[in-house]
Image (cartoon, rainbow, N blue to C red; front, side, top):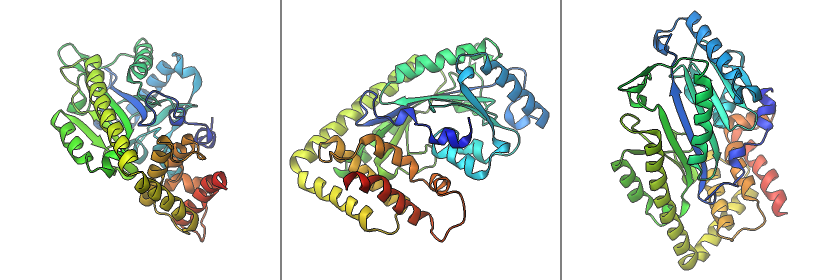
Length: 352
């Protein structure tokens, strides 16, 4: 499978067919692992990097997952290709921007992605549509067990899995749920929710994780601590909190629909007008428009636009994706003009 084929294939987690998908866009679990026979990344020679990648490649190829994935060497990909994979949530920005030998194995539907030589020797993730952390954990745990049959992980009886960053020592697990919380923003309740989450050692980040901004009211809630707790306890903690946040968002949506229906309808109409009439669309207002339309679909105020289309557009209006769509060549149009054209093509043709 080529990069073009991978990017064109449907991201399974954007289908909007998972539990609680009106609010929860996706559930993701990432595991960090290192091979016992090699030092951490900062101490690896180029030859060691090659040996780590080859060891992991062979181990993964023996798994069920390994028979249905493609290995991509970051060194063989263009800068645009690497940015595309980041925007599609298939690799991290750190893997894309790093130097030296590094690779990723990715499934055709984007559900599984394994990064070799990122911050750790191996970082694997599983991502699915909706609120389904237990299902995600079952699948990625099975993959982890299969890999461990053919590779020896760095593990300590007292500490658990050993990782380059101390905050990942223990389970090596990061549990993340991406939520769409526009009603909490409109009713000015999100700051209170955000502050409450920070008090219980959960982090809140934007659409692209650490360092990204929460444009369009899309947020990722994830755990911070991995040491001293089991995987099941971590998942339960995040599940309990996310269920509460879902409840807050649902109540805020009910309030808006009852007390501010006209305001919602006017906001959606203004967004569609902006898309129709603007010759340029910057990323932030575009995501805000998609957020308003997505909320309108879930509240029954918009009926002509499939919510899956809006989910896909969240990624497709990003800079690298637009450059890829339009051939990756120099043009008299800049990214904001491309974005405007792309939105018109995919939204307005539906509305007529």
